[in-house]
Image 1 (tube, rainbow, N blue to C red):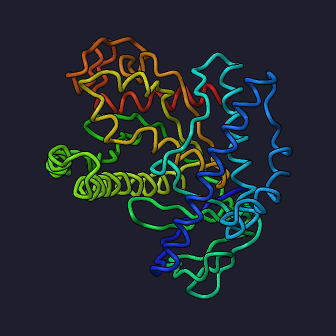
Image 2: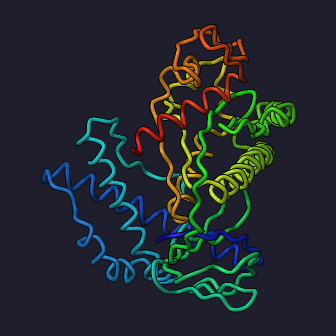
Image 3: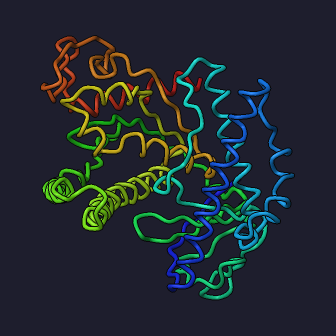
Length: 362
């Protein structure tokens, strides 16, 4: 199975210049290759295949000296990246989705390049990159398995190395414990055991600071260095909020996967739900989708099972007698007039979700 490890880089001034030089050469090559495909299609009605464009790289190096200063496999990966963009475009057209034709990349939207096989090596506290040099790397943990690719990424003035590794599955000891999870706004989740996972609300806590940063950006003249710096500060604060939410989701998902053999979620249409302007910010801030994704991929490698069930009437049905008890969103306690069962609304829903998951598995 594939696993990606991300590490912070601390390049010196010369290495930073080399990284940005490589990024710019890759971006210009990407745009040139895209333009050639568009022109070829307009003239002949046929596109240019991946291998045809890849075969032109040696000739391009002879005419453009700057391309010779970039590792050959990094340039080959640019051709592959464009080809993948075309494949994704045709796939969306085929299934009837919004197509989204590949676009020319401005400098702000091209922030990474990849060594697909060779040209990189970890040497103690440094990462050796071909055509760039040694870069200080913070190895907060050792990457496991066989390193397949190395992607250098620049984001908000910070530099990262992402290693894609082929690792063996590390399955946990079997667990017979089962749990249903009801996602919510007041709390991130409530389990069928009655335990709650608090919603961190990082966006709400940073909202005033974000508003101030946004006002500073809006007052700066477009194209000025001061506006560029203000945009950078605003983006870094947004990145911090996103990283806090991501870290919280990782920790919560790890606890669930370690403890339970079967984990049941509602199969929610989260994209549709965020169109409700009264709940959109709370849903986004809670990170429902992120939690489900992290639990799912961790469960796959650990030998656990994740089941997503139809959420229809999970909050209205009594988990004790299956009677439908209608209640509005403001009613937080479930009280069944038929059997007298009383419980927290979210716990009742979580029990129903677990029951549906067990039926589905059976």
